[in-house]
Length: 109
Image (tube, rainbow, N blue to C red):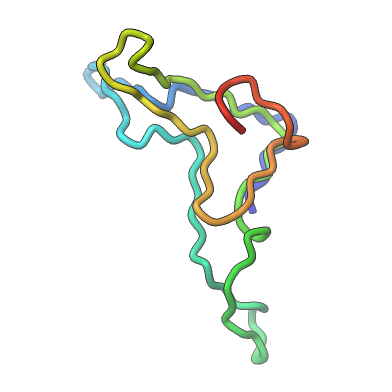
């Protein structure tokens, strides 16, 4: 589990970047923070009685008590020829706790 503290602010354009020469490009994935879990772990470390078990969703993910303010997404309706979809926080198997779990000012939480 990764915890983002209340005084931490993660910001940035996660859909576009400039290469070393300054030329603009679009990212392919369009993801800010992303995590995948290996799904299995030892129940105890350095213990002969440990079992190799499936992880619980509560043991992997993000607890965000700070600010994740990412931008860069667009839509065809905005005059672009294609959509650039972005995801601020993504967990393939796990839990996302976003502050009190009720607020977002962009997109979906």
